[in-house]
Amino acid sequence: MIEIYRMDEKGRVLVPKEIRDIAEIPPGSYFRFEAEKKRITIKAVEPVSEKYYGAFKVDQWPEDLDEYAKEEIMKQWTRKHT
Image (cartoon, rainbow, N blue to C red; front, side, top):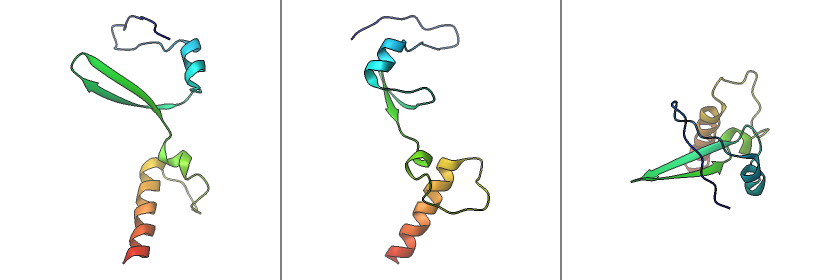
């Protein structure tokens, strides 16, 4: 499916519901943007915190769950490989 939409003055572009449905992208999704000359590629990605939800037992979750998960994974990997 190909659609043409205009970017607003703040650089926002609406992703139409029909396209979100075809791509199976739910509200609240994260995206990775790749840019080349005159081309932008947008890919939906799963945040690290979602992928490892429930894998760590903590008393209080930090504000940045993705960064926390990366740090914990690196600590566990280092313990295993040293």
